[in-house]
Length: 316
Image (cartoon, rainbow, N blue to C red):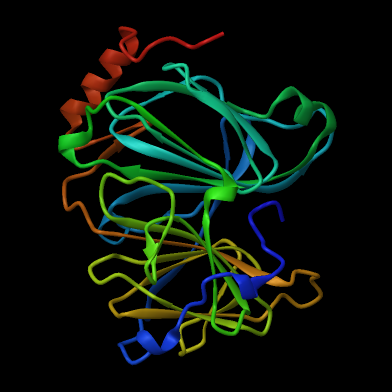
């Protein structure tokens, strides 16, 4: 796995379970299974939030797990130039390389634990594609793209770009060192991730070794979503089963529990989970294509502005 995975966990900050274990546990409200689809020029994705209402997702809007797929030489695919307005796209690469460019002139390579956090705001064009070297050689491709909503007051802010390198991600260990927690944005037990957000939220990637468990505190007032990238196990002390491609929507409580059991016959040694939470924005959400606004009139205006060239031009 290309994502950050320190070999010596004893050097990391450890999560002290005694500070929160006496609180009420979060239990799953529902478990959903992500349908498969093709995105961009034809790369495979799983629609992680399919069938879940905005009530449980807010402030998040959409998430695709990209891959995991192994490309033969000449097969790697990306997206063409396309517009966005009214939200943020967060691209987290676990394995493989994506090259990003946008109409403001920003961009670069995203690879092996890097995160590209792009605030579309008032409007932007961007493209994500494998570099020529990846196309020629092929290889493993795995990551995710998360759409984070912006409140109405920020939907027309100037576009912004955060290039979060893997080495800047805050990494924690469970008390027994059976689990690793990467804090990309937000805070866990006083340890803050590098991502800057417009509303309070948490974005974590955790790895739990087979046979181990993770107890993790959760911020009061935040919703809680757990999506399994690979492996299988249980969520909550009720031992609710959950596996790759499934999303758990969690109820109220001060902490959650995850256990990794492994997949029979598989060489996977960990269960990989993305944990998301945030303070709900509580506003109307109208999503249509590449735009996320508060009203249908604003969606129509976005299409008109895009057609009129107000989002900038592709950079060649």
